[in-house]
Length: 59
Image 1 (cartoon, rainbow, N blue to C red):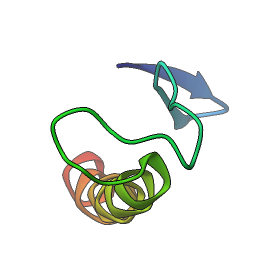
Image 2 (cartoon, helix red, strand yellow):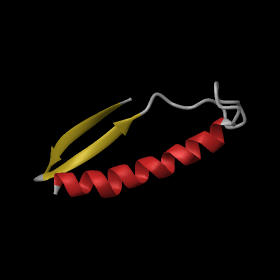
Image 3 (cartoon, rainbow, N blue to C red):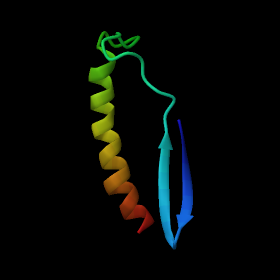
């Protein structure tokens, strides 16, 4: 995972780059859960971290 910051007209554009997920029905190693379940859980966490918490720090 990596991220890029870019100046766009005096504002900062943030891009998070993830290497990807397996097929939605595929089991995630070590969890016993399907990729789709883990992906959705992680998405909810990243959304709050990036959209709320990171914005507070940057602003």
